[in-house]
Image (cartoon, rainbow, N blue to C red; front, side, top):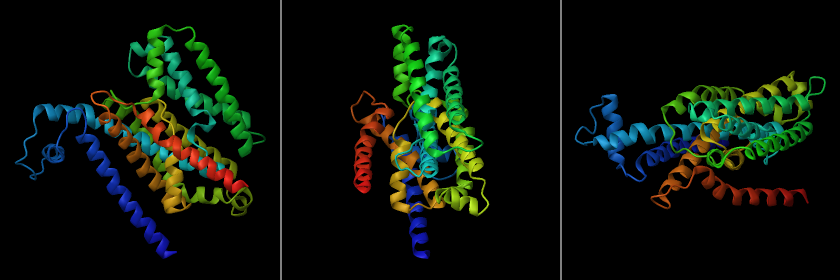
Length: 345
């Protein structure tokens, strides 16, 4: 037991190093490359530290770093971390490695909210309307899914999954109906959002998401022990006095809020909440006290890495991060699906 705990602790240290290394790469690489030492020097100068005083950071590098890449990287880290943690919680609640945050209608609800803001022309008035509408749409979808699944104060897992599928199909039809009546320019704006991306992220997006996402991650980390008990099954959880329905509903609400906030500020980014937690479970084990921190670090690093690769792979064009995560996540998802079918035989 001590040996496994030591291995998990060592792996988390490695993930912290990878987390900061990928962040440094994101700040350095792009259409305008900024040497690593100049990035570090910019931080040192900003914090008033006497180190790297001989390294000169140009005004152009300063502007690119603080006004373009820094908010973009922070948004990527936050969204990836939130999706990673939410995916781990969803997979734990449903005891299914193929579960992800969008399974109960979060992404479908966000899509309805976003396309509604675009159709009404509100997105042209202020950049905040579309993310706010996407967030409200996500919460509406989750509320509808849970309401359909709840019976006598209990939420059967299978009923919840089926309710999520039904709500997702309904909201998908609503989105399609709205898309048929908007003009081509607004349609292009919606398609640009639904792919998911971190380009044009500003400090306003950081401030919009930092509270709900970091708060949600903190709550999920604090409830890791309770999630371990839920994974054992309803009978075992009730045997130790845990109100299963209350805890399950609360964790669903927190994971949904975190996912909805991430979707509303970055667009619909798939596979992070599915692939990252499952990979971390294979590396650190099923104990959520280690799995959740690992999923947070790996999710943030994975999303920022995909965004960085998308910026440099076909210069001067950028491949949006939603496309990169799909390219990298789809092969692993197919492997996971095939492995699950093999185990069921």
